[in-house]
Each structure stands twice: as structure tokens, then as C-alpha cells.
Image (tube, rainbow, N blue to C red; front, side, top):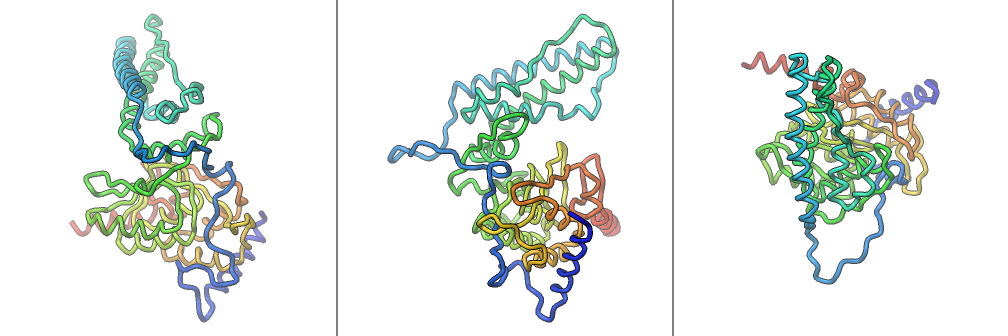
Amino acid sequence: MSQRIIGLALVAMLVGCNAPTPPSPPVAAPTPAPVLPEPIPEPETKPVPVEEPAPVADEPKAHVDDPAVVARLRKLAEEREALGTKVFQAGVAIDGFTHAGTAFNEIHVPEHKCFVLGQLLGKAEIVKSVEITYEPDYETQTTENASDLRIMSNSLHNFAGMAEHVLEMPHDERVVTWNLDCAGQLGLPKDYIKQEGTSSFYVVIGQGKTLKVLGDIEEGYAQKIIDAIEANPRIEQVALGSGGGLVREAMRAGEFIRQRGLETTLYNNCYSACPLVFMAGVQRSNWSPYADLGFHQIYTPDGIPVPFDSSVYRHIYTYLVRMDIDPRYVLQKMWSAPPQDMANVNGYSDELCDANITTWIQRGCTSRDYRDYSDRHRKSL
């Protein structure tokens, strides 16, 4: 896309925003403007329900894990935890160093996550390709081998930790995580799983202070966010991870999050309309291993891209300005990817701080909002 087209579209939006009766987001665009909701994209960018047999009458909907699979995973986690300790000690015995380096803190976490999820979600055959195997060399007395052993130790301990984490996840959260992190990733097929039921919309974690929102941004999403926060008055932070969904629902949820003065963070990749919710937090953090943000053009239910000078984008522009986010950066990212594609930004990128989208990235950058917030906090002490 040429800079000239982007510039002309921005000028058109600015004129619209300065009109005598500007729109008041996050209401839907007036007729005959295109519908704000984004439909579910094709499988390339969005989970697609798979056909499943109809449930037996009166069959309970609650998912029950296969005890044999759970026992096998727990045993494997214990074995790898013990092996991790052994190979670490072997590495230390060679050269005396006790750290593999922060670059290897999360080594093989994506592979371990998908392997364990695949076992629990009935996709054991599919995830064989991402299983990490280990053959430690205890004989070679070199610094290079000692480093390899320490890195291997990190991977082994990461497997044990990830197995425990996934085993503690509710089934519906596992489905969401599989669709976001595994299906179509790491060389795995795009084998998505349908998420069913409404009870899995959120969980409250972190001693009641974090609302972890599950699933996509569908009709009623904003009201569910509002209800969940009002039902849990100790919440200080909203944790997000989503394939996207309806723009108007995302902005309405974001307005409420900002009104309440809540922080946002990412527990998983945040695509399409999801970044609009994330950008509403008064502080916006991204922790290692750094979830990505993804943007693309808005489109109508029949898949036609909305024109760049549409009132839909004027709503978004106004929303971003109120959230103190760089609107030009966000809109250029959105316009750079057609509806069936995604313009991904690495969660560690300094661009996110420069545009004030993320205020703090672990072991990375900080934005002006974070620095201003820290200064105010120190002065208040």
C-alpha cells in the first residue's frame, strides 16, 4: 500500500472526526455504513468448528480427562524434572557455570505446550512431530557440551512446568490455547477445535485480581466483560488472548476497562479486534514469552473489505486518540493486511512502545505512559 493512499485516507478520517456532529464510539456505524462486526475468517486466520458426533441424550457436558493420559503425562513430567536436575549438575561439574543464559529461559515452551495439549485433546498422533527428545552427553568434558547440558536442563524443567500448567487448565481454556498457539503453528496442521458452552468465558486468577478472558469477541462480549468485572470487585487487571471478532464489542469493552482504571496484559496472541481491548488498559504489559499482536482490514459479513475512509475507521481513530494510542500506526497496520491475512507484530518489538500500544515489555522497552505513571507513583510515596 502506498504512503499516498494512507495519507489520503487519514485526511478523510480527520475531516470526518472534525465534523459538527462527530460519531460517539463505541456505537455501531449508522446505516448505510458497513456492519462493524467482523465475521469469522477463513481457516488461515481463525479457528473453524470441526464436525463432532451429536451428544448422547442427558450426557453431561462437563469434560473428563482420560485418567490414563493424565497419569502418563504426570509420570513423564516427573521423569523429565529429575533428568533436568541431573543434566544441569553434569554441566556444572564440567565448567562450574550455573546459568544457561536468559535467552534460553523459555526454550521449547511452544513445543511442550502443544505436545501436552495434543495428548489431552485427542491429538496425540498429530503432535508427535513437536515432541522434544533428549540424549544427554555425560562424557564430553568441554565448555560447549556443558552449555548444551544446561540448555537441555532448561528444556526439561520447562516441560515439567508446562505439563503441570496445562493439566490445571480448564478444558475450554485448553481448546482456546490449542486454537491460538498450536493449530497451524509449529508445522502442525490447521486442526481447530470448536469451543462450546458459555461457562468458559472467563476465570479469575491471581488472588482475585486478574480477569482472564477466554475465547473470541462475539456478540455480548462487552456485557460479559462488564458483568464479570462488576461481580469481582477486586479485579485490577484483564488478561487477554483471542483470535478477534466484533469491533464494536471490543471498543465497548475497552471503554469500560479504561473507565474502571484497569490494567491489561496478554496471556496469548491477540489478533484482529483483540488489540483494541488490550489498548484500553491504563497500563499495558507483555511478559515473556511475548504474545504477538495482529491487525488486518475490517470487512463486511460477506467478506468485502470496508473502505479506508469509512465511518468504521473514524470510530476506531477516535477511540485510539482517547486511549492515547498512536492512531496512524494502528491504522496503517490494519490497512496493510487484507481480511484473510494478518499483519503480526512481535510482542517484544519496540514499535509497540513507540506507538504507546504496550507500556511495558519484560526485558524490553517501556513507553511514555509507563514512565509517567512511575514518576507519579514515586512522587506520591
